[in-house]
Picture 1 (spheres, each protein chain N blue to C red):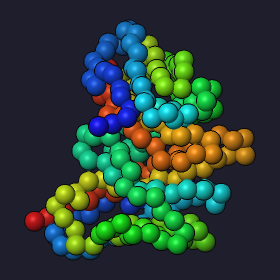
Picture 2: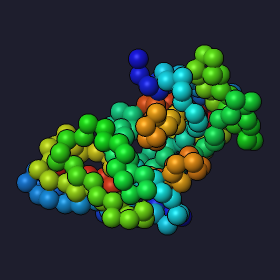
Picture 3: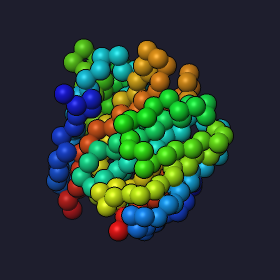
Length: 114
Length: 113
């Protein structure tokens, strides 16, 4: 059973919709990540939060907006997406600075933009 | 040069054979190294960490060569259940204290009965 939970597991949205992906971790970790996995491409780091502060924004378009209200929750707000944004979005967490660097992943949200 | 580079495969290997994957990384300041396993349509899961002295976990052996900046994974006596994509992962803390886990493209392994 994963300690990182993502909802929804599947999402179909139109290009004019606004939706949010949610990630929750129950591991007491201080760092959380959003990754994008497209078909036949490596995992692409999108955002990193460490101790609830955004420490990395990997040149992600502004139509993706992260939010980290506390160390256990991470959101990815989506608006006016494009079909090429269809992918598996994975959330991960790790202990954070000075801790074990192993990352635990949620099961992902499979997003389809139509 | 890519930050983390792997041969994407696919590797099609008969059951019981030994198979090895290599991975190279570009940043010599990288601090930690891992192999993750990802099954089809599932999330990646940690297979093993990689230490400079080399480490073994059952049929799996991982090695790190810092001088040449590569890590390897050896699977002995392969099983059908070993079929998956194996991801090389490199961890780095930048000078500004930012953490970054960088994934390779993954190597697809299929074990053939």
